[in-house]
Each structure stands twice: as structure tokens, then as C-alpha cells.
Amino acid sequence: MAIIAETAPPAGALTNAADERVDHAFICDYVSNGAKVLDVGCEDGTLLSRLLKERAVDGRGIEISQRRVNECVARGLFVVQGDADADLKNYPDDAFDYVILSQTIQATKKPKEVVSELLRIGRKAIVSFPNFGHWRVRFSLLFTGRMPVTRTLPEPWYETQNIHFCTIRDFVMMVEELGAHVEAEAAFSSRGRRLEAVENLTLTNMFASQAVFVLCR
Amino acid sequence: MSVARISEKGKSRVVDAMIEGGGRSIEFGPDRPLRLDSGADLSPLTIAYQTYGRLNEARSNAVLICHALTGDQHAANTHPATGKPGWWDIMIGPGKPIDTDRFFVICSNVIGGCMGSTGPSSENPATGEPYALDLPVITVRDMVRAQAMLVDELGIETLFCVAGGSMGGMQVLQWAASYPQRVFSALPIATAAKHSAQNIAFHEVGRQAVMADPDWCGGNYLNEEQSPKKGLAVARMAAHITYLSETALHRKFGRNLQDRETLTFGFDADFQIESYLRYQGMTFVDRFDANSYLYLTRAMDYFDLVSDYDGNLANAFMGTETRFCLVSFTSDWLFPTEANRDIVHALNAAGAHVSFVEVETDRGHDAFLLDEPELFDTVRGFLTAAAKARGI
Picture 1 (cartoon, helix red, strand yellow):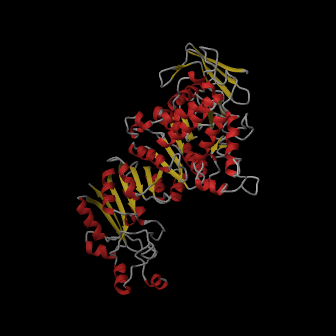
Picture 2 (cartoon, rainbow over the protein chains, first blue to last red):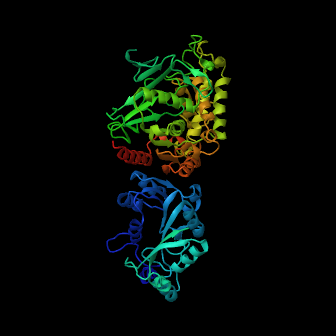
Picture 3 (cartoon, each protein chain N blue to C red):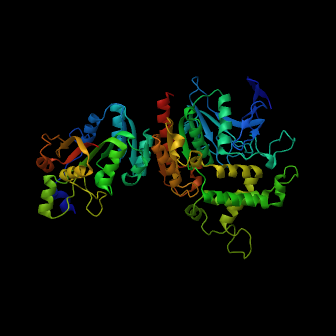
């Protein structure tokens, strides 16, 4: 275990040099002022608080961990305990301007259905996820023959909550199958730098450690 | 009784006065009857209530506390009958989650109750005798209408928050559905949008226990100078079990024996749990009216906000601007998490602002009355954020 942890290189930190979640920064830039937003898997409410402060959004959250829900409520956020697989169906069509799934899709049981639900209840869906197509992941699998264990994904395969990893190419193909459109996308290096030329999928899929997609119907 | 204030509204006469044992009482004269769901009018109408803290100048900081089945208006003061602290003393007070340094807290005895508000032991103006079973059946919506009359009379247009657990939570939901403009935030705890078959069943057991007591006298025990204490105590014992959980009972009592080394081979209270329940039953009858117990359990049985809104609870809250926070407890089997979550789903469907917290505890339904830090943190966080939004 220890050997793997040391030798397996990180697929990328979620944060940039300023210790800021790069996907959060992108989402905050993207979301329009005063929008109605649902953050699915909102953790302790960091992104929601930021959107509230910077974008004055009408924000709600869903979070699976009761402890974190309580933290959110104590922060004055509107968050309900629930999970993406089970609870999205209770929301009506077009209930939100943006539905955000930030670093959560890989932990859902049925990612394709979840994204489809996001696009039903939100006019736009914003999905960020770690890219399993990153060259270090490929390298690690090729040379150690084992599932990568990284800084941001520290659990071994048998303990991880993350059950549905995908590459950027996989995600793009799923979006096509859903008949949805990519309105915007951003890819980030393992140092949290935004990659240019994201239209070259092969390169992006090789060098991005995480990606953010804005989808619409 | 000293009359403190008499106001004239239209033709009606309203008397607001201090009452013995603490608190106040407001009486609505014959010109201001309460039209009940049953179609009957209730008049005169008396509402006994308590307040804590001060109403601010903008009249924007009032919190209405709705009590549960066997609660009363003495939420945060020493109870005049038992001498014990108020039933939510732990939650309401200076610096507490419902902070009386900040909020003006009102708690009224529900109609149908027995602590000063009009109920089955009140005088029936038609006969000069206690109503007993001649009191029309009361519903949760009737209770809320009566509270709205009180709130009107106190000169409060919008309540900053309506809060309560169990039957109190039902009233909160009814307030939010009936008067969405008057409820800035709502805090229903350990409750349901409709009473379940299992809960109706338990209530029926309690009512049958009361009615099976010969001293109940067909409901006329006050005239007969009797008191169906045994029946009411049994009702309370059965109900009390439903407020706890198997784990909590096991933890507190197990199979421990009460003041004895061995079984007595008789029907004394050998076990601590028996002794505890007998005590709960005995002390309850000293402070509660048997007919009130019938009326209030009936009110809960009849509560069905879902059918009131054509089978779709979301209709009850469509377009609401009220901020909601719901709380349930993992070991509550009377108002389980699922029943609370159904309300959350309806609120989501209605596009409402809602938070939902499930508190992990083994203390069952009663947890909402107990020292549960997570509950306090939730209430404090929710109210603090709401107060900021309300500008208080």
C-alpha cells in the first residue's frame, strides 16, 4: 500500500496554487448573478457559500453526509440530506437555472441517469470530475499494474466511494448519447492551471487532471 | 384575575388578562366566534398563552411555538402545576437557540387543551356545565386558526418563525400552508403531513383505555365528580412507549429489577420499566384532562394535509416564500425520517427554500424535547440565518 502511495503520482490536486478549488473558481465565473442553483453533493457548502457571496444566487444543496448537512444548515444554507441517485426525481422540470455536480459523478450509482436528471431539473448542468485518462493514471496502470492511488483519490479500490471513474473522452461520449450539448468546457492540469486548446480531445484527455463541462439540452 | 387590556374590534370585545399561575389569557366575545372545520362555531373562545422576550418596534421578531399533544403554553417557564421547568426550557431562553434576547416568543395552549384555552372542560355557554363531549371535534387547522386570532390581537402581521415538534410540527405545516404570507420561516420537527395508520391505532388504544374506565362516566366525569385516572394513566403508559425506542429502553432499563433482588412471582412492578411507566401514567393524570386527551389525539388523527391539497402535498406550498428547516431523528418510529422526508420532497417540488437534518440518536420521538446538540446547532444556525435575512 505504502509503496503504491509513494510511487503512484497524483492525478492532480483539486486546488490551485492559491489553494482554491479550480472547478469552483470556474463555476463561480460561469454562473450568472441571482441564478437559481442546486449543488448536488455540496459537501460542507463551500461552493454554495461562495456562489451566494459572489453571485447572490438563490442556492440549494443536496448532501449525503448528515454531518455536512448540519454544517451547511448551521451556515445558513438550504441543504437537504439525500443523494443524487435517489432524490433528484423529486424535483420538478426546469426548477433551477444551474444544477451543479462537482467532483461527485464518480460516486454515483448511475451517472448517466443522474446527468439526465440534472438536465431535466436544470436548464444547464455543470459537471466537474477527475479525468482518469490523465497520462499519470495511464502510466501508473501500465507500469505498476494496479489501480492508481493518488493524493486526491487516496483510498485503495476496495474502499473508495468512487465507483464510476471516467475519462474526458468517456464523458463526452456519454453526453452525445444523452443528446445533450456542451455549452462550455474547461480542463485543468494537475497544478490547477487551465489548459488551452480543449478542442483537441486527445491531448486534453491526456494532460487534464480534471475537467468541468457546462451542458444544456 | 386582573383585566389588563380590553380592545374593541368592530362589534367584538376582546379581553386580554393576566391569569393565575403565570401567563395571559385572551377571550374573544360572542361576536368573534371561531368557525371550526366541523362547521360548528366555538364561542366564547379563550386562548391561554405565554410570552418570553420583547416584541421589537417593527413587530418583526415574533416566534410562535406550537406545543405537542400533552404540552402546553408553559414552554419556558416553571410549570404552575408540576413545578418543573417548561417543556422546551432547554431550547428557549436568553442565549439559547430560540434566543429570547433577540426574539419575542409566544406559546399558546391549543384549543381542545386543558391549560386555560377553550376545551372540553370549559363551560358550555348553552348549559352552564362543562362541555365534555359536547365540544365540537377540533382539528389542527382549527388550532391554527385560533392561534392566528391571537397573533392578530397581539398586533403581529408576520411571524418571524413558527416552530414545534410532533403535533406542534403539524401546526407549523398548517400555518405555512394556510398563511404563507404570515410565516417568514418554519421549523417543523419530528412530524408528518398526515397521521399514519399505526399512529391512529395507538391513539385509539389510548382513547379506549380512557373510555373503558368506569370513572369516565361517558365523558361526564366532571359533573359526576369523578376522574378516569386509571384509564388515562394506561393511555399515557402505552403512548409513552411510542415516544421512546427499543434501544433507549434497553439502555435505560434493560431487564433491571425495581428495588428487589429477585422476581416476586406476582404482578407487582418487578421490572424498572414497569415502575417507570406506572410513574409516568400517575403523574400525567394530575396535570391532564381525559377528555382533552380524546380531543387532541383525534385532531392528530384527522390531520392529513396531503388530502387537503388534492393528494399532492406540493400544492400546499406552491409559490411559498417561507424558509423551511425540517428535523427528524433516526430512532423515531412514531414520526420516522421518511415521513419528514416526504414533506421535504413536497417542498422541493414546490420550489421552496428547505433544509433537512436527520439527527442521529437512540432516544426516539422524545429526542426533540431533549438535550440533542445537533438539534440545537441546527435550530440556532437556521434562525440566525433567517434573522439576518429578516434584518433582525
